[in-house]
Image: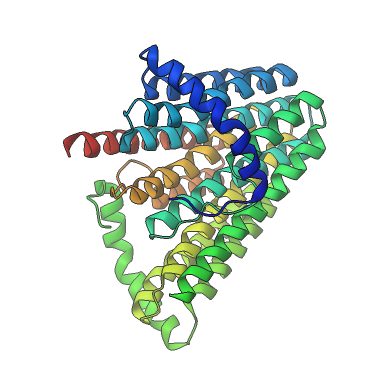
Length: 199
Length: 199
């Protein structure tokens, strides 16, 4: 399951991994189950989506960052407490997608209310691209091909989305997200092509 | 890969399968490659998305039905001509998602232009739900669990979406799509839970 990743993700992970491990150890001592954390992280992201729909973009970004941080903790917690499970991994992946999507659906609704069809278009493309980045990985793994390559994995998407909302450069940020997620999908399609033609 | 499917899909498939097989045989004689058909089907659905964005919903529905019919033919053609490949299966799945999404992104953009935020909300939810139905199947298959169960597989989604646009009951149709796709995701989450707790 461990593929060579792009260097930005690697550096970020090296930075955050010790922090995640220590937080996971603390949560494990409190007896919190990994799946509880998964569901809690999703509910917080759902709240961020609600705030976005109402037009509170800055607060939506902040809450989304908190929810996503919790979402990043469930895996390390499961490993630390020895409670990793197939269902846990599946639920985590599924609710990670829903958490990210909740924010984007909220944003699309807000931009529609504010009469900004171009931003609705970009947000829909970003929603599509983000989900397809995850889909192409999952579909390839179903065919036995590891496919975690590419520019914009979840960590970068969360970072880009949060920055976009906190700084307020929505058009630029959503344009970047809309385009770079499709580039990532193309990278993953190419990788499956290479893997299947070399064998 | 063959799971028990709901009876509606089964009946529809029994109805269409002989037609698909005969069309696949004809295309095979013309020497058309399955991947060509996959890309062509996607481009037609992309055109449907463009028509939807411009507000021509009836025509978008009609063109989408044509594109989806082509998309349904690539699998039988690949099997009939003995040109099935891992990459072909992957490309087909990926472009099927993009074809369906193109129509929904087009619709969301149109509803935003027309000042209908509720319909933008429902369309975004339908986009999310449709992609997640496919995601939960792919992710489960990566874990070794067959997961083609549920109410709204692609065939029913295409049917519902086309009917919605041809008849013009957009609010009702999109509401049904937005809700029933999430129900299907829940069915697939439950199935993975059952499969992993029984083993």
